[in-house]
Length: 361
Image 1 (cartoon, rainbow, N blue to C red):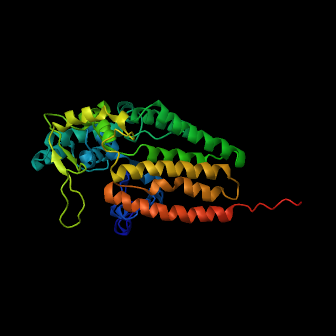
Image 2: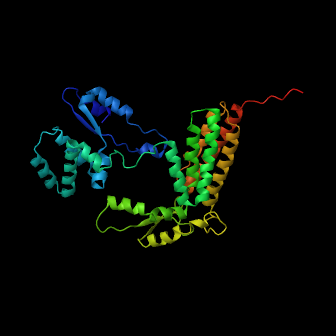
């Protein structure tokens, strides 16, 4: 809507705009996953062209998903909203007849259209029905809440000792940061996010736990109804065939019986990292465990020597694990890049550290 061709057709005298402001990643994110995603500049362009009183922004994608179970009806939902706002010069009968003549998901489209009308007429009621938020996922809230949730996640991931180790590491950073830069918590947040990412790596046990978690089934029940079936696409170690072109493992299609196998596998998470862990000797698992230890040791040293001069370099180091993404060979490539950046930042940190003068005899 903020593109040049669309903006050139807008007029502050005759145009009214109803914009679905739900943001989704574009193809460029595949090459640059850290690209910022923000609607601010787009909103400014449209408002500058039309005026604030002639444009309205709603998250039709999220509202349609919450009310209908699928975002595919967001366009017809938005049309219902626009109709109720008297922005479409057609009769209700004509629109409903057009939906029927189209012959595609007739009842679903009619319901979505009606929900859109209700959203325009009674926004308070819609807010109540959808939980009062414009987002499917709740925001992280305060940093303290974020950390508390991650501690709970790691408790479910492994055990109390594992979660306590995470909490202690974050607390150590909090204390050091408060001394060096009172009031700031940027370093604490970076460590809280990065350390959690490293500690909660998605191994076979965790994948099994997540797929068999009742919350996952609950999300499926919200989005789908009827007699549907589940199929799983995995690339298990040793069993997966190699792609003849790339040489990388290919995923295998498994039927619904895999859910029972996953439930059994999830109960063996206590073996993770032990000498009895059948997956522990895999190269990927060794790498993931080494990254946790390496990061912990590095941040211990960084925190002990933390000063105002080293703060910014320490912050970049603390956040660096967030660049590690993917699985298998993709993750391996990301780790190699991570290690290069880590060495560069460690040198930068050393050059930023104040030189200690020798005491005079």
